[in-house]
Length: 195
Image 1 (cartoon, rainbow, N blue to C red):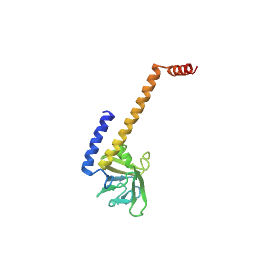
Image 2 (image 1 turned 60 degrees about the vertical axis):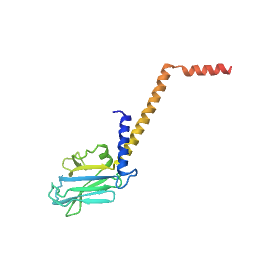
Image 3 (image 1 turned 180 degrees about the horizontal axis):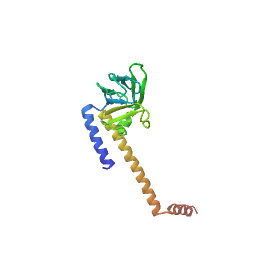
Image 4 (image 1 turned 120 degrees about the horizontal axis):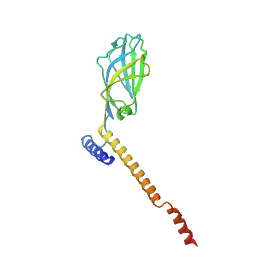
C-alpha cells in the first residue's frame, strides 16, 4: 500500500473519529490496562505487591504470598493524561517496604509495537540474569482515536513530503547526467555575451 493510499485511509479514519468524538482531544490521551500475572525470583520475600505509577496516578495489586507469587485482583487501569510519561513498575516487599524490582515501560514503545500488546511479557531490570527478580504482565494501550489518527496523518504527510523532495533531487541528478557539461555551456554563453 502506498503512502498516498495510507494517508487517504488515515484521513478518512480521522474524519470519522472527529465526527464521533469532536475535533478537539477531550479527556485522556488514552487508557492503559495492565494485567499483573506473577513474579519470580523474589528470594527471601514472604509477601509482596505490585505498585505502578503513570504520571501522578498510582495503583497497586493486593499482596500475594511467596517467592514466586501469583497476583489475584491483578487488573490495573490508568486514564493516561500524558503518554510521554512512562509507566513505573515496582514489586514491593509487604513486610519491609523494600522495592525488590523497579523498572519502567515507555508508552511510545507500546504504541510503536516494540512492546507487544495483549501478550504476556516479562519485566526485569536485568534480562541477562536469569536469577534476577522479574514480573510477568500483559499490557494494552488504547490511544484516543482523534489523537492517534491526527498523529498518523501528520507522519504520513511528512513521509510524502520527504518522498517528493527525494524525487525532485533524483530528477535534477538525471538531468545533470543527460547534460553533464550544461553548466559549462552556460558559462561560455555568458562570456560570449559579455565580449
